[in-house]
Length: 199
Image 1 (cartoon, helix red, strand yellow):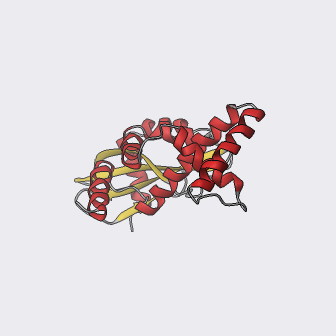
Image 2 (cartoon, helix red, strand yellow):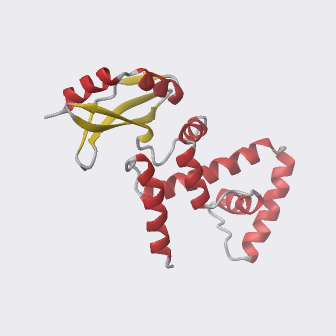
């Protein structure tokens, strides 16, 4: 199976579960690269300065030997070498874990002082409910806005592709609190928000 076909297969497998999230394959790959960089940065942060100097000397030797050393960006050399040291999961495994534990990944990303280069809203939870004799899907989407987390609901009628979404109706200190507020909504509340966005 070619690489394009493999990517298409995992994309269908992981997105079919949660009603097509707002993230494209390009955004997911950017998030994965950012995840790897965060893990390596945390390793370096734990190391004493002298150990880090020795590690950089080793990294520079390795990168020079493999034609990868960039004298203009020594940190790139150090991070490339760091990727060899940590047993980081491959993209496909990271993607599956992320779809099974979205809140854990959101909190891990939110704890990073570095801004996420792909800071798009993330679908965190999906609920089904009936309104007007039809079946609807309400998907909670969240994103970090400085020190707070915001969330909105995106509605879709089952079997249809058109979506309707609210404004940012949640503002909380954590993504977990946004999810808790969303879970407090009963069918009547979801129906009221759906009515407010239908044409």
